Amino acid sequence: MKEWKERFDETSLEWGKKACLNRKVVDLTRTEKGYSAAVLERQRAEVVIKMTDDDISRMNCQCAIAKSGKNCRHMAAVLYAIDMRKEAEQSRKNEEELMKLWRENEEKHAAEEQKKSKLQIKRRRTAYEEELKRREEERAAEEKKRLEEEEAAREKRRIEEEKAVEEKKRQEEEKAAKKLAREQKKKKKARQDEER
Image (cartoon, rainbow, N blue to C red; front, side, top):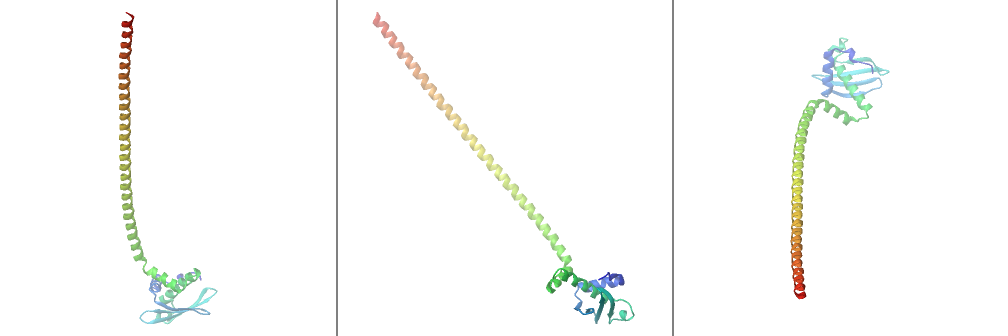
């Protein structure tokens, strides 16, 4: 369908789009020659869109503006609804999905606000998780430092114990050497006395 919006003024287009999104277009039906639908306002406006080769050939509406020969806002509303239906059909959406699409348009602002709220919650959660991670890393670092200090203390005690053992062994060897020297001296003196 060629660009139909050029046939309408901005006021009619704006009203027609809002009417479509607010589900005021009802009974949209595909006919042999085009589409028929109704627009709910103070009075129900019946609209017929005739098409040739996927292009608008004629449009009719019961309202006073249409009867004066102009394209009315009800026609614009129905054309918006036709566009939305075609988009849904092209993407293989059923009637329930089409209603969902309309609701999504109506609730767009609310969804954006929810998105902002979720983003804020996500940021706070991320900050909380980062803080937990930082604290966990600090605890792990403290535990590692404690274990290293305990290992260093054990190594220090081991070295001191080895030194003590070596010192005791040295003293015992020195004592044994002195004793052996005294005994040898006594034996030597005894031999000298015997020789005399």
